[in-house]
Amino acid sequence: ESWGTELENICDAIRDLVVAFPDVRAVYPVHLNPNVRGTVLARLGNLDRIHLIEPVDYFGFLSLLRRCYLVLTDSGGVQEEAPTFGKPVLVLRKVTERPEASLMGLARLVGTSREAIVKEASDILGSSVVYRTMSEGQNPYGDARASARIVQSLSRWLNGAIPVLAPSEQFESGIREQIATVS
Image (cartoon, rainbow, N blue to C red; front, side, top):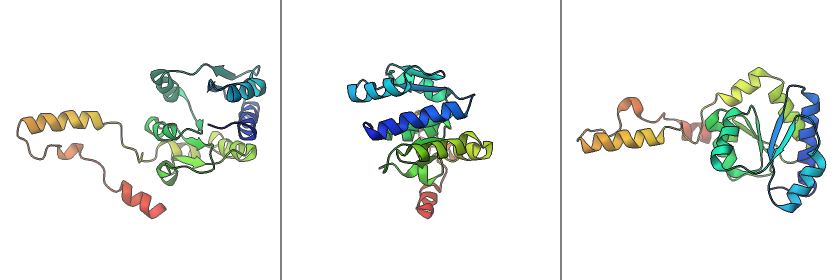
């Protein structure tokens, strides 16, 4: 999580984006940490189209993620979850230990500079081509069908079928190779 000047930059960038794009609304689940909460409330507290909400449980978070257009986050986990929903991600960190989405073009590592955040978000919000490229790319974290494959494999295994995973259900190949060629 970010705080101090970095968090101030992030808040100011969110404000700039809402001002620049009249159809944009921001939903911000505010962390309970008083250092974060105080800064966010002071910078974004009474602005139209910026909805500061209490932290949400995981299913509430997934509902927000499914309904949003663009994700700005400093969370490593969210970097992995957003591509599953076809949402472009701006990673508001200087480094990430989860580079796969960035390498596949689904996320951008932008840091916490106000100008960089506004520039990168504006690029995505202002171009349907850029948005489509980032939202429709191949997800390096899977296709959200692992549970169905496991059930099918167990059923086929229990019935003596070989291979246990039907050929039509096998994983798409080449993700690791694509990441390797990009990095």
